[in-house]
Length: 286
Image (cartoon, rainbow, N blue to C red):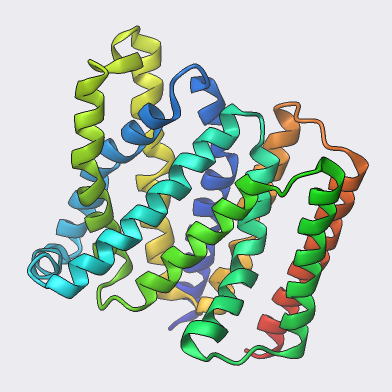
């Protein structure tokens, strides 16, 4: 990998995470649209972008081959189920005014992935990673104590994304081919849903239709950027840059006027400390 490739990879990753991180500001514009409809348009308008990119980069044949592999398709169906729940809960959280809690889920996801990796794949966990995980657990418990309930949105976001990652790790297809199949598998039920609601909000006015079609800008395009960045960079580098995404989601929550109590802010501080330890450990072992 050349220095130019690395610089291009970093720029692509940064753009992808900036777009995803600021996406709540866009999705808030369609708060009056049911979450399932937003998810449907986000996916359906993204499919042509991903499909065309797969063709242009010579991955269409692998896409067709994967469709004939029974075990691969079963695993992709399971992965699709978990990532679909993740997409829905993220949009639902924005509409509930809980964007900060959704970002919280993406903060704890990588550390949860480390723990699941140790359980499922017998991967080694370092002392610093254990401390980072303990800090994240402490943050979760602090929020639970302050609110009198567990932060279920954050936990669902983190758990579904982590399990999705574990399943994808076992599938012998590249990230782009896998994502295209996930979009394909879920598109049928989503199209059926839109037919059931007779087009839903998309047919109410031109502005809403344009906004719903624009959801693809925050799905397909940054996903292509992310895939290209992952090809050029070390996995640990992408993992560290990933934290720009939930950080900007948190900033988006503040911009949208979400009020966070001092205990919740303290919990975020504890989690950020855990994240800092986790990132330090990744960079130290490169």
